[in-house]
Amino acid sequence: MIKNELKYSGIFWLGNIPEKWIIKRIKDLTTTKSGTTPATNVVDYYENGKHNWIRTTDLNDSELFDTEYKLSDLALEKCRLSFLPIDTVLVAMYGGFGTIGKNAILKKASTINQSVCAILPSKKNLDSNYLLYFLKYFRADWRLFADGTRKDPNINQDAVKNLFIIYPTLSEQTAIASYLDQKTSAIDRKVSLLEQKITHYQQLRKSLINETVCRGLDKNVKLKDSGIEWIGMIPKHWEVRRLKDVCAFINRGTPPTYDETGSFKVVNQATFSKGFWDESSLRFSQSLEVKPRGLLKENDILIASTGGGVLGKVFFFKRKESGYIADSHITILRDNRKNYFSKFVYYYFSEKFKLINDILAKGSTNQTELQKDWLLAFFICIPPQLEQTSIATYLDEKTQKIDLIITNITTQIATLKELRKTLINDVVTGKLKVSE
Image 1 (cartoon, helix red, strand yellow):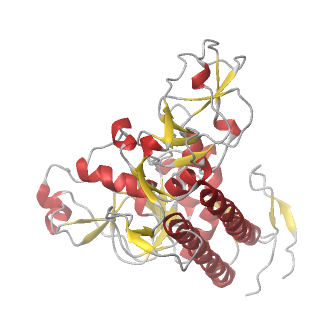
Image 2: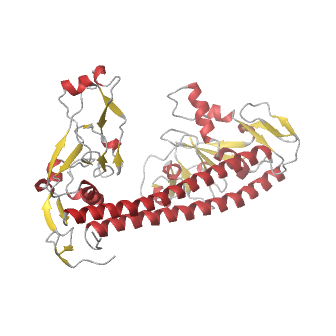
Image 3: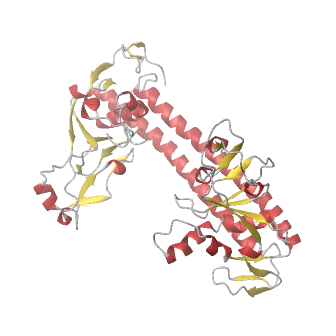
């Protein structure tokens, strides 16, 4: 692939463009439309609907065939909604910086709501697939047009209409779109295979932990019924105990005020939601009146005790520093020095937080808090202490290897996605020339 001869576009965010390419506003090359939302209190508009009705959540940055919600014939008639043709290009206008600019190309005649802008290119001048790739290139820059006074900035149809687009001849646009289809599809296939590998290793990790904390390392050991349905068979010499017999519970409320000049860092549920230890998510406490039992200790087990998508999730505190405390949404489990090894207990819970949520859900569909009394009565199967230590050491070694593999695959995926983005950007801005 060779480079085009370039000239300055006169637009700061476009920079240089190919000498023979044309620059115009989208409104000069297309027709734009938006839709509406039929009254949600009219059940007949939505019940047994069969017509695609597109919202921003349906936009998939690719070809769009189906939608989450469907409209009835009555809704189309009463609300005067019209179908958009195949190859209409769609752009999200509402939803804040995380959503505006999401795009798709329509592959089934559909209707849209008011949060989506439909762009119908003139077939004489602009190829729909080329336009879609240009919008992919521009997606991160829609903030230049967004309403900055809103908490979740939006754009409007005028912003879409007035966006400058650069384009070559129609035949070259088609060649560019075809080339990018081929190259991005190849990258997407590689990414999909790598994501499948990650899923495989995550399942392997989960199975390894579950099997080991319930069966031990000796595959020939004699088993017995634990008496607990969801635990099943365990080694004959193991015990089944309640968590209150295994760990001490430490609860502490969050100090009322925060200040970066304070002495204590507060561990909150952001640590759990990110899935890794993130120093930047911790806050500083201004309060100096902290009870010693409220300070976190090395090898403490932290359990998210409220909802928000992390209820029951477990974190192992490995810091030796004493300047950390947990907020009121976290339950602290601590080794009670009764022949129980906290790392084994952590592994037992680390892959069972979903089970905790499932059991809670049976009691109340609105359960959003992990009750201390319930957690105290939670059953755990316990081997002798030496065996606990051996199991924890074994799982440390095995899970670290799996985690390293997953990290390496994740890095490969990120590299491929960046390559995909760079390829699109360089081709649709003419930095790289695609032969017709």
